[in-house]
Amino acid sequence: MKRLMFTLAICSLVFTSAQAQKQLGGEHNVEVNLSPFGNSPIDGTTIKYRNFLDDDAAFRVSLTVGTSSDTYAFYQEGEMLGDPVSPQLNLESATTVFGIAPGYEMHFDGTDNLSPYFGVEAYYMMGSRSDKMEFWGPNDLDNVGQPDVYIVWDLTNKQSYSSMGLNLLFGADYYFSDAIYVGFEAGIGFGMSSFGNHEIGTSDLTAFNIQFNGAFDPTTAGAEIADSFVGELPFNVVEGEIFYDYYDQLYVAPNHVSNTTIGNVFNGALRVGFLFD
Image (cartoon, rainbow, N blue to C red; front, side, top):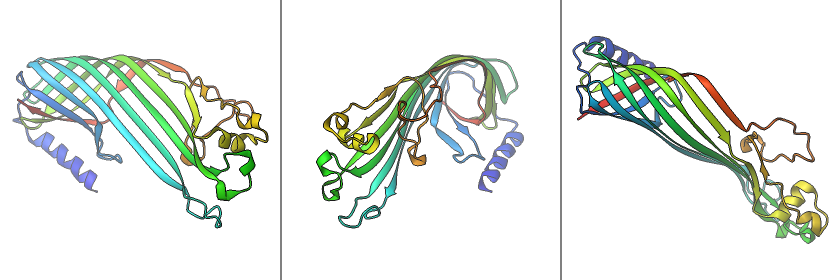
């Protein structure tokens, strides 16, 4: 209900403030995306800045920065074994993203409130995801079956990606006050994305081989983990998808390596900006 009321308030301002003045040149501008009916109504991950060189020309740059890290208790203390008391084991998932997109806009006559424009924008974005799962078990063949000397070790699964491209855009800003506007933006773009190697790692190689490979002698216990695969692989530690062994399990999905697109681009959120000298 609060989101609906907020949206109605914005619409009311748009249609009742007919005397607002758009940019004259020399102003600066900060803009965010607004999605009133989404889980996060205001998207603070991406912020756009504009400098109006004149009333009909603007330099723009968008900056995207985001990071998220979640930790879950996978096993409670004592849940696996009461004597000796087994430790709490956790799952962790972390993501990061960084992007920059400089561009230029050419504005045209509209009305006192409306400023339509064409623009061009280049962008580069990179991100990564890393999941970790903790285990409790032996890290020596002689310690199998002796939980009093077990250790906590972890398995990690991570991958990075990057994308770049060029967009030709059209849009419009509607000023419902001398400082605040709402707007839309769409266009056509060319983009390329690529995925870095999918990497699996462990804090203890012997413990890993005992757990996943049934190691029974020093050779198998010390075998190197197949830790790098080309292409995108699905993994989600919360869903239990943390490790795939290509050679011993029937995992046959193709690995997505890259993507190239030419097509429509559209900002589905409501752009809301503030203009200042």
